Image (tube, rainbow, N blue to C red):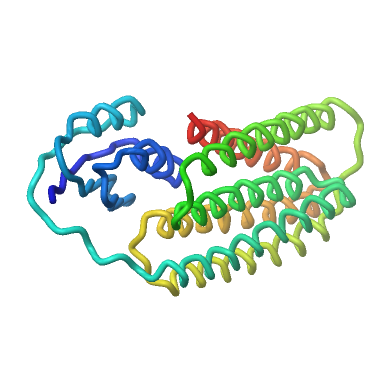
Length: 263
């Protein structure tokens, strides 16, 4: 068996990893994909020629460069049942907080909480795709990615419209207590998710990617908490609208990347 190594300069988050995975899994000659996201490196274990695989990677336009091919044996597969169990827990935590933050966001009038809830939904989608990556069919992944991407994009667009409406109209200051308290609970939920993912000590790319997404969420939670504190001290809606607009931008970017997975 051969091992071909690629440097992927634009592979810096779970979306790119999933794009490459779904692009290459249809090739019968590809036996195993070993991703190293922090170092932006991909090792393809395959039989036969590498040219078709190389052209498929290049078609994604992720700044790939071919580093060479050597003879090698594929690494030992990790326990997939353990990965699935952890991912189901993390998916449940994220989707649960999506519902909680969306509900309390509308009650408290906080765009920061609503935006963070959609960020949680985006993560739920990534974890669902990661679950499909553990033995899932490529056609099913693409259908989920397409539906989820358009749904997430629609929600993000509605969020932007609402932020602009509140920006140009005389709306009430959001309830900072809800912003701070709910975001603290969401922060705890993300910390638990990160602990569960790291507990697996998995080197699989979709598990590493999930850890990166969860780490980013912790930063977003901190931003909403800070916005809540500023709303209290300034008695103004502007900090909430600013953080809401920023997070909606992340959600829209994530939706575009998820849609790329369905192509």
